[in-house]
Length: 258
Image (cartoon, rainbow, N blue to C red; front, side):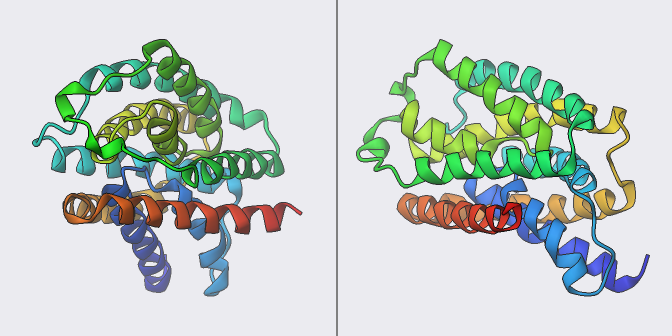
């Protein structure tokens, strides 16, 4: 591989993983379009949507490990929430990851576009009073959390994401989880989800291992740095950054679909 290509993939992985750690997402919401569009833009061979989804799935697995490790102290990890949503999303992501081999590339992009559009709408719904709760007093609807995580897992497995870009607005808007607890817990749930998506992609031969390895190295550096930054940034700013990123990705992917 050329040095320029290696550097390009590394920077995509670094930026995506930094944002992943800071906002509690796996990073695929921005890494998917970056991997799809940036390499050909700078003169390298373009990845197919199948290859992008495979690389993303493997990389998210490692990016979320770093983020969870950085959040392991402080009381932000809601263990019942992680168990209920984690098990459901693991099942869904394996189904989606394995089943995606039977989908055309346009179908993968369409699923990504629908997930991103849903997340965009939810991020702009007002979330007043969320962060006034004490962390040890947070409650949620457990059956609803499990069902929503299963649905998200299937869609996320198809596109090689771990689904956190949709999990985060669901946790904020539907389940009413405080922002920092949402960020920390969604990273743990995303890690569990990425196991299913990664197994599904690897067993069906959809992973380009050299680019994936470069992305993994970048994520191990960047995700903990992003998580540390996320602890210090105002929660309203975190929500706004996430909303803008999701909106930009949604607009771009739908422009390409049409």
